[in-house]
Length: 96
Length: 469
Image 1 (cartoon, one colour):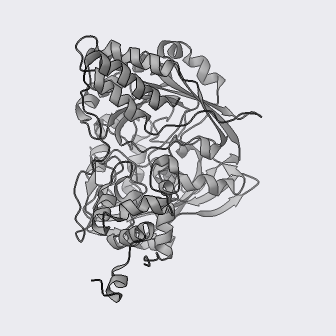
Image 2: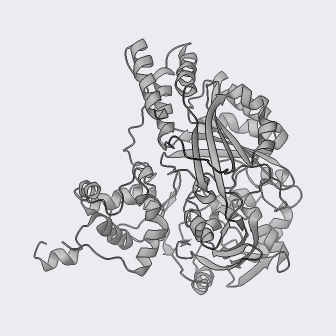
Image 3: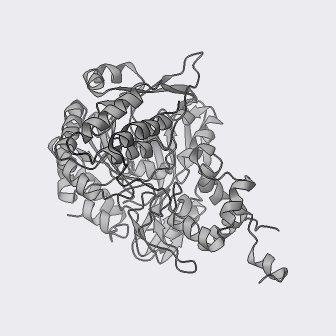
């Protein structure tokens, strides 16, 4: 399963915002690349994760600090972190 | 033993054994704390870190260059506001019209190894600023105890740390470029546009949007921070000696407790090493103990203090050492709301005593530690430290509890001591009251503001409240 790849702008948004916590274990945030941690989150589905990202949940602030992020930016970054498929991947595999 | 585990152990063995059950409102920690809900497919709202302010702007822009910033600001419709990391507790950001995010205006522009000055883009998060400056052999002389905000936002609100010899982040700015609503990009420093320079180093974003700023740094350095649990009265009795003896000193009074947490930071010495661990969830543990015993009639306060004194008093010191940009900041994952006023430095001890006494006398439901810091005087027109050395006292309430009632009980104490509110934190003062706190330069600032933004396009409801009579 392939996840969506962020473009250069989205990578900068991720670097400036998401990675402040998602690369530091002491924050309690799931760490980028830790497959076990992200599997449980991915199981919630993209829509639930998106809602939690925008509203904030537990230690995660609303919007994950990213006021520049659009809904599409959030979706791409969620798929990247959680290794979720892009809709185009599902369509091409006849899963939608 | 980790402090949190010890407190939790004390809770289990002490409070629940003595009273048979645990009551109170314990934060489950899994409840979304946003003031509004979001449904995928609907317009994405803006919500601040503390979750006490939000808006749904009709236009959201994120310029990635100075040209784009100038163009965005000039053509923006309606009330236009800038946003960095959304860490302000006061409603400086909300607008229903145009919101300009500075996320993509980040990174190093230039630096001078001789003067130890560096120019960085204003949207750079302080979290990234440390490593960037370290890579060129520089470091800011002081930094707040959390590094999530953007440097532009920090300067706009005079964000500060602690240390008798150190000013706010604004005080290290030697120049900046300011994009205005009229489509100009102004270079501002002590020689060029000096009036705008003095107004812009603490402007609450009322003059325009900074694209970049230059900081007066020093050579990279190492720090050692020691956290300890001490008797509150002992600390207050020796506060002047401590603030003079150490590069940085602050303490966290704990409501209803006779102990407090002290944080002493100095240049690292050979052989300094880390000891213990920082615990980002410690305040939730504190709350759990407070909630468990505070309901007990009459003896609740005493029991709480006894548990804390026993639990915390036995803890060894926690020591953190390393590069300054790694030692200054701490992880902040527990949501809270904050009010902060800066009173004249000499009034600090009396002010904090009166606050703590008021909390006990009025039995205010507060367990989140307060924060007590000193900051050097500066000459920035609307800085809380303008013309006087300041003692900054911060009051916090957990993010899922009502803060208005308890803050309303404490805010008048700050007024009594001629306190100036932090621009980015919760307060209720309006323009008329604020003008009285800045008698030297209030009108100077308003004149510059009206020249740069004659139509008030940067004035949201809150800025109208604090700047327009």
